[in-house]
Structure formats: C-alpha cells, structure tokens
Length: 107
Image 1 (cartoon, one colour):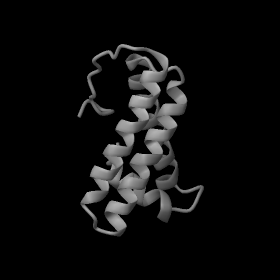
Image 2 (cartoon, rainbow, N blue to C red):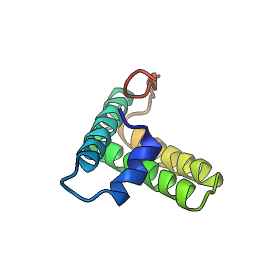
Image 3 (cartoon, rainbow, N blue to C red):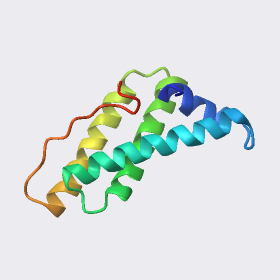
Image 4 (cartoon, helix red, strand yellow):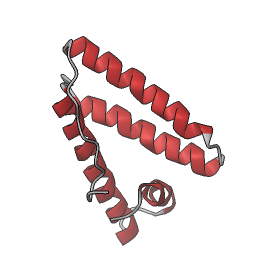
C-alpha cells in the first residue's frame, strides 16, 4: 500500500488513467472507508460525511506540510479534526466510545 504522504503527493502529479493514479485513488478510498468506520464506531450520525471532512483535512495537511515544509500544518489539521469530531459527536450522542485507531494495513 502506498504511504499516505506519497499518495497525497502522487495524486496531484499523476494523470488520470495511469497505474499510479489508480493506486492512489484506491488508497484514498481505503483510508476514507477506514475513517468512516472509526466515525461510525464512535457514534457519528453521518460517518461518511465526517470521513469526507476528515480525509480532506488529511490531504490538505499533507499537501501543506510537503509544499510549505511546515511542521505546524499537522497540528493545525489535528486541531481542526478535533473540532469536527467533537461537534459531530456532541450533536448526535452525549457519550463517546473508545475507538482503537489502527491505520489501514495494521500499522
């Protein structure tokens, strides 16, 4: 499986129809499904929407981190993700479940 940073970078550089582009698209779908599953298990009312929002943050954070060489980008994305998750979970259920956050592929 392609590393997330490489996938984010390759998706912008690889034209559609290439093997690299197809693998990048597949990787992004796997990551989004993993995040949606975490969101569902945590009690999000719309796990697909939360996963879409969070994966946009992941892609943006990776892009800014790579292009700007800004280590603060990860912290900013993490903070924004917390706001999204907290708002989503507080709007749907008063309790939070504990969810293990293993990456796709068991890493």
